[in-house]
Length: 192
Image 1 (tube, rainbow, N blue to C red):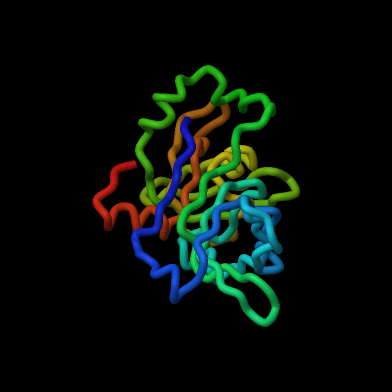
Image 2 (cartoon, helix red, strand yellow):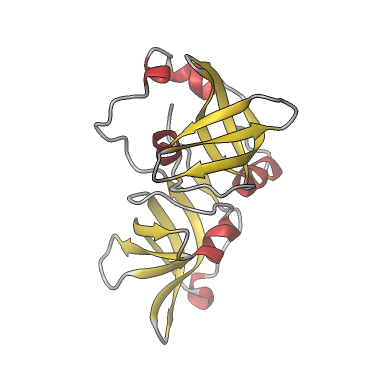
């Protein structure tokens, strides 16, 4: 399964509206509603507020994700005002989930994206469930799948788009995408 890179479609005048910065997510805590980005070129950390992330179409972002933002200088320091793109962190040495280990990554990537709503997700336990619209079965979401999708957490009732397979113990998500990000892509005619 390849990394998905979301790109915003709005053009920004960098001279009037801020500086375009590339970096990585130092940390983001959805419960606190903010986190910080470290710029590739150095300098102070850049505040990333949950509202700015939601405007991009995500409620969380995985630590270590590559990120491009438009940032401005405020009285309290640098602050992101727009997220331009997010790339999930590189795969770690974590072994693949047993349900996904024997499946060709091309097959996983070709699985259709379906709309779903998060039933519950417990970050401390490392898993949760979603309901796909039109189906009765719960879909298992593992924290590693969430992290590889570039997300750090999910909230009950949150709308998402997921790729689902029949795993060894039932239906399982292989990728989780923020709903607004998928809607933006569909609106631009992009395929995924």
